[in-house]
Each structure stands twice: as C-alpha cells, then as structure tokens.
Image 1 (cartoon, one colour):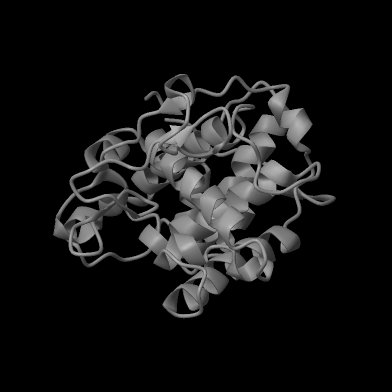
Image 2 (cartoon, rainbow, N blue to C red):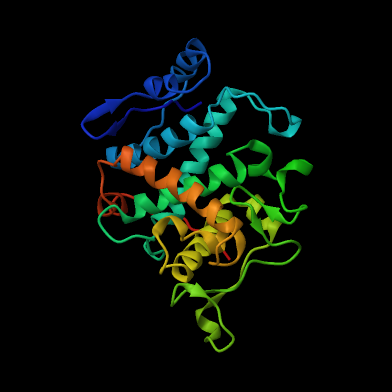
Length: 269
C-alpha cells in the first residue's frame, strides 16, 4: 500500500502526520495511518502538488469521520487511498495544457484546482457513495445529479463542448471542434470525466457571471442563472472556502513547474 509523503506550505515543511493532526479524529489513529501511507513520485514538485490537494480533503473531510449511510462507510485507510486517486485525477484534468486555467498568473491552475475542491466539498463532501455512485443517497436533485461534482444530467448527457474555443457548443459550430458530453454513469465510472464536465460548467459559469464580484462567479453552476437568489449564497459559500483556503495555503510551486513534470491523461470522450 502507498504511504504519505511530505509537502511544503510556504517555507514550512509539513508532514502528513501534522496534516492529519489538524483534523478532528483521534491523533493516535491518524499517526498510525500516516506511518502506512507514502506517495512515491520522482519529481518533488508533483509530490508537493498532490500533498497540497490532499491537505484540503483531509482537513475538511477527515478520513476518520463517521458516516451513517452504509454505502458511504469506509476505513480510514481506504479513504486515504481514494483521496489520493481524487487528487491525481484533478491533476490529470486541470494540468492538461488543453484545459485553460480559470485564473491568470503563475498559480492560475492551482487556484483553479482550489475552486474544484471547494465545489466537490459542498456538492458531495468527498463521500465514498457519492464518488462511486453507490446507493440512493449518492445522487442529489431527486436522483438527477451525479458524481463528486453533482452534475445534473438526469438520463441525458452533459452539453457538447467546443474544444477549439473552450466553451459549450453552439448550433453553428464546426463538428470537428465539438466533443460529445458525458452521461451520469460515465462520470461515475471515470472520475476524470466528472471533473472534466464540472470544470467546463465552472468555466461557463465564470464567463457568464464575470461582471459580478468573484465570489458570485459560480451562480450559474449552482442555480443556472447569474440573477440573485439561492445561487448567490451557494456560489459565495463555495468560492469563499476555495479562495480563502488557497490564500492561506499558497503553493510553493508554479503551474509551469508542474506542467513540465506531468503527462496528464484526460477523460476520453
């Protein structure tokens, strides 16, 4: 089984033991887990990125947390392995050069990843049943929404995407520029498709609500409209958690450093 490596926040080196100690579970149990898990990456910057993503998940959804739904239950060891897989899938999608970052700057992709984490936290809480599509509580909106990003697709597919223009497809777009969307089961079976579809929706929401304060840019994602309403509260909750955490845990790596070390495997269409 893999074990957890050390990461770096600012000038401070943080071991996974210390990360786990910030959660609400028993410290002895955390320390035992930390001795079992370590990620092996040949490149320190990629290792640090994975540790950076894991820190958010462990802090907001401790592996030792209690679950009342049978399908959500897993051992702390199983949760950590699954969290690793989630982090790796986020890197695969968001650090693919074909997927533009949501923000400009040398840390634009890392900031974008923070937004994805914030959305996942509020939409599915990183729960096992939501992630794997198990049981009746794994899908919200009356069973219409799927995967960790709770994408409401029902029995259909997500909207066709224009890969050349990085936006949703339109009726007069060239067919060669369009890629088919995903079904709910496809997004559950392949988490990268879930992240890809959610990232497209986030980008579309950002573009539609760009005239509003940044905390409101997820209104369309949350409610389908930029107008004031339930979507405003949901957007601010997700964006504030994401950006406040990012600003409090600034990465010590740049996007270019990660891109030079990774060969992302994106979701297939």
